Length: 280
Image (cartoon, rainbow, N blue to C red; front, side):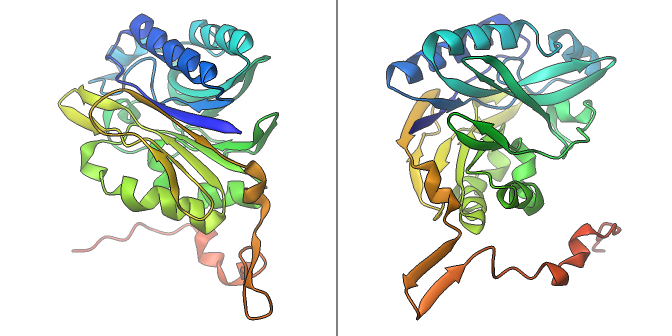
């Protein structure tokens, strides 16, 4: 399967222009034969809003205009995509990603782990775990931006049988090293494909550095965008490779049973409610 990540440069508070850019990337990807494309977090609204009041006019219900535009394009092009947008949920804002395919809206996921940055200072965190989505292009799961910092959501998806973790993000320049190791670590420790779509440009005084990438279950970067501007990168993958949690490198001498060798009875601290650690 050919899949890809689209690196865009959203303009804060300009959804018409931003949606048009997303649709152009979808068209370009589909022409190349791509079956699954990931777009950045808040790809249609921008991210660095100064207040909830500033952000609220650019939030929309789901389904809404953006999902309808994406669904029409996916129907016409025969492609699946994930895109980030601001969701209006009653009187609350959510940082949400939607999965859309040729048959319309497949699923939405609301960001549950929120950093103190940009619009995430004003949105309500999601209260449902990411789930595995069975689709014609594989078993998919979504985590958004900061959530890749936490190993638990990706591991939970992997234990549920996910093959591809789709990661729309707005990673700022302050975390540039994550593009070197964090994407590769999450993919390798779970033996899954990881598709990270970051944005570029400067918004609200914050620089975003791109380097969108597709990583395989061994942690190899199959494709990576640069830092300079919008870009589309594609990679050929075999989703079935993510099901191979057991590997016999030298049968009988060097074997790895990634999930079979786990010791869950030793990991109780992971689900205990603990106070944050403060270092004086």
